[in-house]
Image (cartoon, rainbow, N blue to C red; front, side):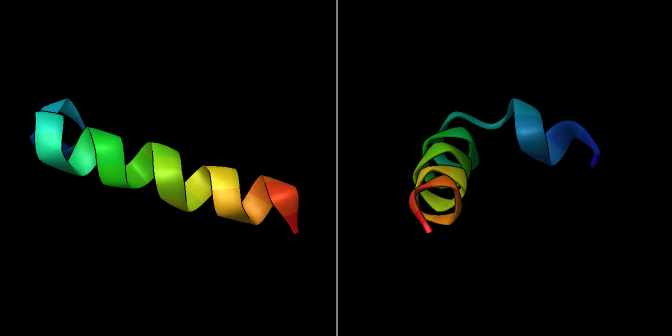
Length: 24
């Protein structure tokens, strides 16, 4: 949990990743 979360690319991937987890 560093500046990586501030990255736009990883931010989108993070949203998709958490979305899939929340759907499950």
